[in-house]
Length: 360
Image 1: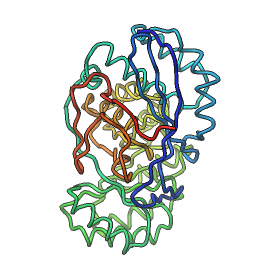
Image 2 (image 1 turned 180 degrees about the vertical axis):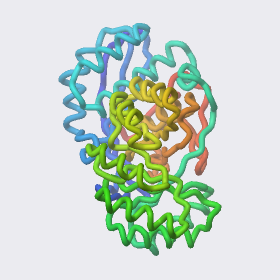
Image 3 (image 1 turned 120 degrees about the vertical axis):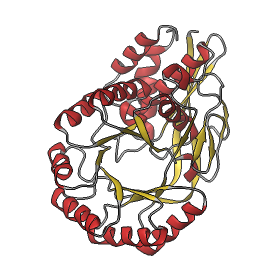
Image 4 (image 1 turned 45 degrees about the vertical axis):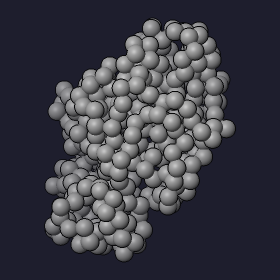
């Protein structure tokens, strides 16, 4: 199964409602789609969202990285020689993790097709179904409380609350949400690097004192400031998760060795795909650190790959794969199946993706 061609397209999918964080506001998913075609007629699908404020990757940079560097490196190679494929992909260009992730995902799709098995079984096969949280965008406390109640009515038991815009208002937001949903619902918060170190400690301690029962806080401080991340971790009881601070296996190793965070969030667009994500899982297993699998604002191709990883590995105990749920439509035939908070996998080989509608 040799790689014959790499084709690049684009999809545009409106969101149900604007997605607001401390870093950005988004109204639609605008993702690059990759199709890798082999001499056997098999097609592997990959996807990359341009998330410049997090990965530094734009739509143009993703396409250029694939067209100018990655494509010519992998064409002609055999899917059977998978390790060499991954090594050449990694060395084809520095950084550009989203472009690499799109190609990596498509290659893993073909890898599963080659051996006629769903990818999660080849990677570990720990489970066939997972439960995701859903994100509540940052707005006024009243609006966020209403959105939280609506999510619970749709069956969600875990809410991921966006904060980090204003610490005093963040406390009010969380009080309003906890009062609205009660204590049978798990609340996790994501500051998206929005607080200063002492501000983070102040805010989280206030939430602790208010008895808000926060499951964990994600990336409270700037991504590059690992010392401040550790400062927050050492000075609050709420578990701290590293997200934007962890792109590579080396990043994960450093944070675990420093005990700078209690948990790690794996996202394929940060790691450059499944190959490095699997290495982070192995490091986490050694250090006894639980992981979450997350996503950017992505449609179902790349999220399907993330679901397969989550289903394969027991070290991934927390799931934040609500990207397709936030979309107003699903342009992807095949892949994983979403039923409110439940995501299930099929026995189709690879990622099980058949077609993508509206591909430009």
